[in-house]
Image (spheres, rainbow, N blue to C red):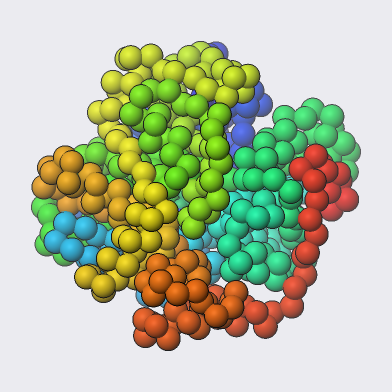
Length: 492
Ligand SMILES: *Cc1c(COP(=O)(O)O)cnc(C)c1O
C-alpha cells in the first residue's frame, strides 16, 4: 500500500513507514492511501472471534503493508494490554435499545487519544529503523488537552524520540493541565501558550513548513515528526474500533451481518469521525456518520451549507477538546470527495480568506455519508443529566454532545437504525462540569471535583486520574505563540 499527499497532483508515493515518520507532506497536504482495502463479510465474522489486539493487527495490516504481521501483532498486544486498558480496549456498552456507547477512554490518560497514541510510538520506532533514519525524531504536538497528555504518555522514555507539547493556556480543563504539568519522562517538554488551540496548531504547522528551521534541526541531528491526528499513524488505529464495535454488536445478538448502523462522533479535528468513514469505505455496513459539534459549530454549518467559514467567534466550552475552528482532517474528506488539485485550491482559500465553498458535486457526495448537528452548552448539560437520571449512564461532556446530537438525529430522521456513539473521555476527566451538570452545584475545589463526583454518583474515580494533586509539578512555563520555535531550539 502506497500513500500520497492530498494536494499532490503528480502523486509521488511513499511507504507507510515513511508516512508515519513524516507526519505531514512537504506541500502541506495530508497523507492518504492510494486505494481503499476492503473488508468482507467473512473477514468480519472471523474477527468476531478475535480479541481487540488481534482485530487491530488484522485491520492495520491492510494499511501498513511494510510492517510484518508479527510486528503488528506484537505492537498491538503491547499497546492494548490489560495493564494499559484494564478490562479491554474498546468496550461497547448498551445505553438504550438504540444507543450504544463505544467507550474509548479506558487507557492510561482516560481519553480516546490513547487508542492511537499507545500504538503509534511503537509504529514510529519501527519506522525509524525501516527507513534507515539515524537522527532523533522530535515530535511536536499542538493540543487542546487530550492529545498532549496521551502523546506524552505514549512517547515518554522511548529511545531516539523526544516530544514537545504546546497547549492553549486557558483552553484545557484543570485536570488536563495537571496531567500535563506533572508528566514524567526524561525526553519530554510541555509549554502553555497565550492563545487558543488554533494558534497552537498553526504555530506547529508553521514550524513544520519552515525550511530554515528544518535545516537548523538537522544540523543538530533532529528530524521533526507529528503526533497530531493529521498523522496517518494516528488515524489508522482509529479505524479498528469501529470495525470492532460492529463485531461486538453481532456477538451480542443486536444485529446480524449486513444490517447498517449509524455512528455518532463528538468531533473536533475531524480525525475520529474520518476513521469511521474509512471503515465505511472499506465496506463496513455503516449508514450515516453523524458529526457532533459543540458551540463551535463550523462543521455543522459546513455539512449543512457546503461553506466552511472559520471567521467566527471562538467559544470556550465545557467540551474543550472540540473547541476547534480549523478541522484539519476535513482536508482528507475533501480529497476523497474531489481531487488533489481541488483540495489544494480549497486549502489555499482557507489560508487566505478563512473560508471556502465546495462545489455541488462534492456536497452531494458528502451528504450521502455525513450529517451534522451541534449541541449548545445548555443542551450538553441537560443531556448529561438526562442520561444519568434516566439511563444510569454517566457520560463526560464530549460524549454528551454526541448523545444530544444522536437524539436530534433520531427525532429528525427516525430511520430506526442503531447508533454507535463514540464515548471519548472518562467523566472524571471533566469532573467539575459533569458534577455541575448533574447536581446544578459547583464542585468544592479544582481537583476536589473528582471526589465530589465520586461521592455523588457512587462510582470510582478512573484509575489514571487518582491522586493527581499529589504529584510534583514539573512544567509551568507560559510563552507567546510566536516564541514556539525558540522553545523548540532551547529544548533541542
Ligand atoms: C480529541 C477529542 C475529540 C475530538 O476528536 P477529533 O478526532 O479531533 O475529531 C473529542 N473528544 C475528546 C474527549 C477528545 O479528546
